[in-house]
Image 1 (tube, rainbow, N blue to C red):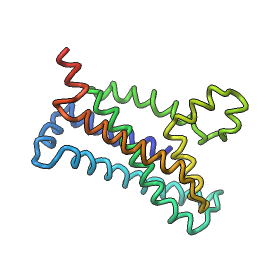
Image 2: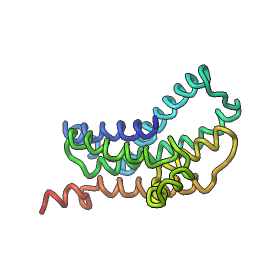
Image 3: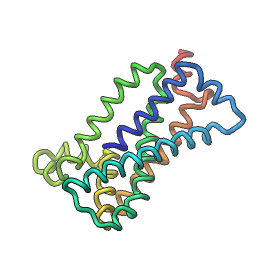
Image 4: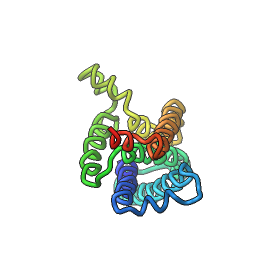
Length: 193
């Protein structure tokens, strides 16, 4: 959940920068647009990983007992998860022009993604209650993030979930780069019509 919120919050700054005009200066630099967006995404991912480890330290001091090697095993999964969730936020920020609108949309994305994942209840319990909810959960990319992190903390690899996260991260980032391209931008096309 920390990475989900962090990914959306880091994308919120993109909307703010666009609204204040500083993004226009950044995007006119000689560096390729995808590189600038990738650097922003990697910075947001790094911040989210530090936040996750701060939370894990607190959890370790209170009730959770994790294997020591699980702290190292979770790092690659956190990188892919943070990248995927940050790219999703970046994709959303490419379509929204105003800060207030993005803040509202964040809630409509974060809470359904969180509640329709196995973060609170196992998937088999959701399947017992409703087959439809279970099917929706299987299309939720955050679901695979939760499962990958959970498995890797206890030194078990969930390669299917990791592969799905990686593919989603690439798709979200590609669409975000396309969305920030002024020639192909969704926002620009809406402004022209």
